[in-house]
Image 1 (tube, helix red, strand yellow):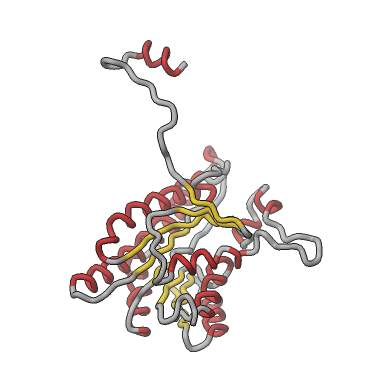
Image 2: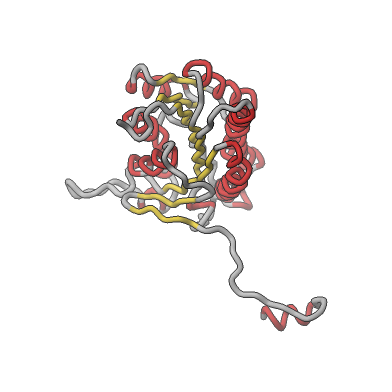
Length: 277
């Protein structure tokens, strides 16, 4: 018995890196997997490695119609959809003063819209199922980042903004979709992938250990067990954001008040300066 027996899961960006590790672990835990990637060849390679319980579906998750097709293919091929893992992403790093509009738009589009579009279509399916009286035990795991939550990284203003938006999106979606039997969480993984290896300072941090037999803290496979648990029918967690790397999982909290400043009447600039200065 696997933790995901009988579950049908879409995993975006599953041709390489963290998404690939998700797909392989999900299949080993009994899930039927839709391996999505913008590039068809790596998606097909992962699906072939899994075997009959996987299909490869290429497509642009940031396209509203493309995302709809990915969701529909899962339902058509496997008869249902239980899990959506939003993982696809790109980097276009550059410091703020030098970043182009195209670099900003590309990252916001792939990450933020590329999470929203599949989530929208999956949510519409689950809502319809619930309204029809069908049992729903849906699970969504979105992919935020340390850069957008607890460790802002210079040169990634587009990526950090998108990932912070994904974390917020996850919390809102959890509140909206619970009534239909759907849980929504997010992860902020720190792992070695094609993206992180090329980021200044980060690449050195996530490098493989040089000592033979040493624990490879930043291998992307260490992220997937948390995602698999959050995707399981037995899990009850929703509305959470978790940082995960190696053997460490931490629950994250977002913006919250720390120090408070009050006045008995309306503020003026002098009073604000006196309180905050």
